[in-house]
Length: 179
Image: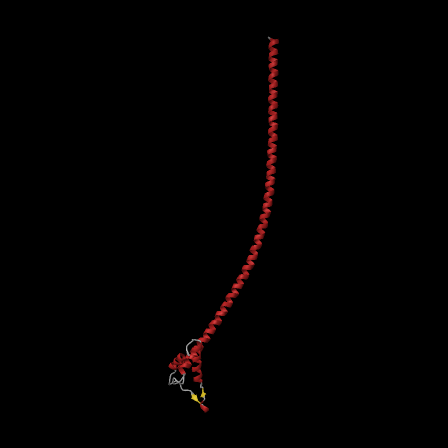
């Protein structure tokens, strides 16, 4: 920097004595080299171009203050983002817990419904057996009734044949005897 014309205060034994302004300039250079990845020569040129000869390093100090303000703003923004992320995560966990409880309730309801379905299947199966038995009993009764009815009809037909045969015999005998 001295080669470029920046004057440092010299003390005894020709050692440099750094003023507050010099420290600001050097901090600014350090930031340019480390954070913004500028070469040392470029950082010196940038810093010296911003140094106002009347104000010394006042312009650099103001820029440094602005940079520090921006950094603190960035830190605050990061903290706010972390807080928002934490709140968001807390809400997500809360939502997950609620969903877990609801899922457990739904699972229990599903098990209850399955149990009801099994019970209803058993009831339906029992009813189907009873219905089949009733159908069998009705069919059996109808068959027995039909057999009895056919037997009765056969007996009636036989009786009619016997009556007709008896009347025929009477009329033949009556014809023989009576005429």
